[in-house]
Length: 419
Image (cartoon, rainbow, N blue to C red; front, top):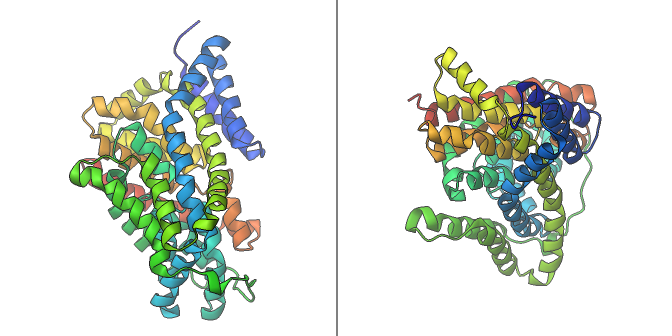
């Protein structure tokens, strides 16, 4: 038996994973089944296949711990109403005359401070629908503003995708976050441009469902933003002053600090439980992603990609954005694609002179840019949040893909050695 998986095995692993996800099999099980089938078809003994799957999952265990720790901050932001206050304040301050820009910026800020993308979409969607009704812009337009604004923020966020990329390259989380700033701003600007262009396409919002809110217990904007700012401050101590405070400590510390400032410490236990529940699914997905990564790491894919780059005379740095984008298209998960690409292609990028920061940033940009396809959860979460029929939701895909391409191109121009 071989100790290396053939290209056929890799293709079978990816294809079976995609097919099972499309068939509504839970993504973790789909990935594990794909990895098992890929290893066997690729020429491995079943024992070796299982060993590679376990080794791959073990590679991602540190990232899983950090993702679980981030649940404290996420739980505080969402359950305390802080995320809602942040979004509402931005929209109110910018005004309805710049409604689409306000919606784009609000979701960008939410994901940039640590609210994961699905939660940001759910949080801002009711506000966006209310504004769409008042200003007469289309449902499709505000969906693009919300989803792609959140995606832009995800490029520079302390969310699981960025944690996975930073951890794989042993980088400070804030370094990867700050490196994503320019691609994120470019993505947000292009999102606003596209949303404005299509503001009369598709159905209009004639009614929206009002949500009951507890005005008395809402925190102030300063209090709401205090937790994420404190976490980012702690994380920034390493690149600024060489004082290392790992995200395993900084992110939950930010959540606790925010709860104290908002005077909601009595609710902290329930916030933590909620955050843990939200992150548990992502953590399971990452471990399952590791099984697939274990098969790909031990395949001949690297040598094939190197041959392809040499044949077309392309820079080796192109592996980073292309691998992140390809894995995102295959898994429709930013976190999974960042984890797989970083672990599979990280070593070859570093060996060929690509800096760790450039590699992590470009992989992360590719990973977050194409998680919108129908075999992923974000597609269905956003469709439900905006009360869209499947046909209308599908019409957004070309615009989302175009915005994703812009984010990847800007990141590659800056960090791929094209300047």
